[in-house]
Length: 520
Image (tube, rainbow, N blue to C red; front, side):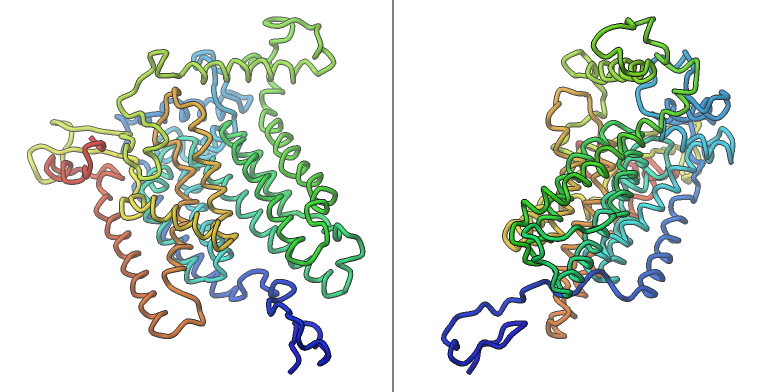
């Protein structure tokens, strides 16, 4: 009997030759096909997310003023709006230590609602809601399952970290939004590139050159560059995502060329892909980052705007650069010096600071707001407490070790690109912080971890659910386990609701909410 390959039958005279039964190229799977159902699920869960994020958005405040680090960004956003130059340049702020994008977004909310809780938190709530939408769409595309995407949406809605961050006027939720959007763009770009490569293979042009075909303009990769530029324009830690996502994009391109039989995939990627990738994921973010300082460039009063000729000389090796760019470089150096000085060894300590090894499980949360005594009422007891704590929902975050271990196993042993991609994104948000352990750090730096961790959990639930071609009993048991777990997460979120939103509770209830000694 003749052995068959995917393309040609082997003649009977060669029937003793061993031929791999594996397909020569990947199956033509370039994304989910149930578009209508996918958007119905996405929009429904996004609406639920909006309700949770916007309910009581203006509450609580510190006697009508911002709470915790809102005290930095809400006034700066207001000055961006009212200062006449769309820039935070009030000398009273001292050195403005973060790029302008996040404060400009806060200013947009303040333009609509004024200088109040709704105003300085509105943009954060919008960003947090969009993150839910993006997580659903990304996981749906990664898993090729609207069901798994829907589970991811429920999990991100019920995550305490993204929930609280969506309801405060701080910068980290915007950084998370742009990082997740950039990741989503690269995932879509991967599918689109494979679709183009499949078309070239079907036309018999894959071996015209030994390094494979050109893949045309890749607008999704360009979009990722724009999002990365906005991430850097929000916080400098966005640069970590530029580095990690650049490597991820190269890995996607190499694997695509290998999958479709390009003779020299690494050389082909070097010749065809790395140059455009550097433009899209390095040059474009740099241009967007510099563009985010447009108000600073246009101003006369921006911090260090005219440093050349004042703080630094007009000559030297870099004198060929425009004075504005040199002044921005000088300003950035002052910002870097400020951040570099925020170290424990320099005497900077905070009762709620934490180190990155505690972040995956949320072992040391962040207390944003606390009020007790006679000024607090409404809990039905003589003494009441109001608190807002940034804490990861334990039913998810306490599973960080097994979930990440499973993702690593799927990556290294099963070569599962989906888990690998999520781990790269998670690593971009997590690993760089170990380089500067002496620095003062807080759990809110882990906000960017949350969406990618939820993606890892959702993909793990997909493994629990089982393959679509599994037996009905296997799928039914898997679905039962997954539904019970998702229900547990939602119940845990509901339990934590009072300390996520500042609802008045009794001191006894407050103590019951603090599950670990490190939460106190």
